[in-house]
Amino acid sequence: DKIFEGFRKIAADFYPALIQAHQSAKRSENAILRSHFASREFTDETFRMLNDLSKSGANDSRARAAYVQVCGTLATPVRALIQDMTMNFVHLKYPEQSFSTQEHLVKPWNQLQAARSHVCFLKDAPG
Image (cartoon, rainbow, N blue to C red):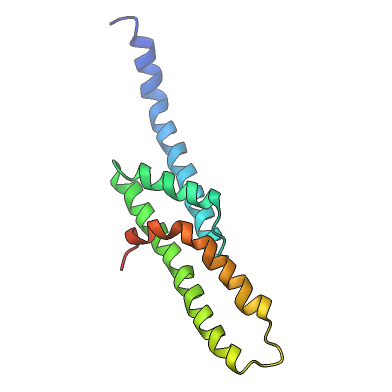
């Protein structure tokens, strides 16, 4: 028991700092996710980050709340993409000269296809 005394002291001294560093890293990761979703970027990396956040929320209520909040952030651009696509198909019937098929149909369609990999997280979005 005396052998572990030094370890216990080190753990007691550094544990709060480790917790704080971990929480800071998670907040940073959440901000990165929000930034990617706001710019409608859905990549393998954002999927991995969201999956990791989901797993960390399994046993921690604060992490779970952060995960649910990020899922809500994910839902907003996905809904916007669907609305944009619907509106752009309507505009396709009577296109204006400035209507760019690449910009108004192809790009949102590709973003929506990339978002499909993230659909499994939408079930956890609030509302």
